[in-house]
Length: 178
Image: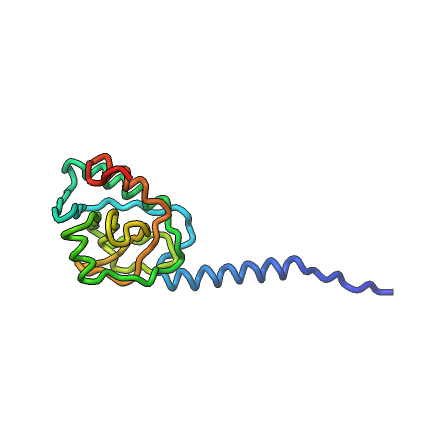
């Protein structure tokens, strides 16, 4: 009497899972333009300029200026902590908000000499400038606004932990104790 061949379920199931993961990765890689979108580590970028908008006073920091290294390092540490969202938050910067940031509130803007992109599921083409509100409108939400060529784009990322940046701003005297 012939025995029936043993049906192997493990191999087809493993292949199916692998194909599903490959398709999921490929769709996100095509959507984001970043093949490393899934990595939990963030790349580091060196700003070429940092603007601190300090309640109506604008401080322009270039490499070598006092405070530039501390703020650059704090930005790197803040971004290394990652982001809390998988998509952009539906929010933008109105002209009125930008006016308040320039004249009444505390924000930090960082500018980069090349396009930057974080390992997220958000497309980041042409991003060369970042804005983080620290006191005032949107300051408690840990938003990171992105832009390029002098324009701010709609949508924001949510920083997981902005305490390295807040601590550096406090040490440099821009932010009072909270």
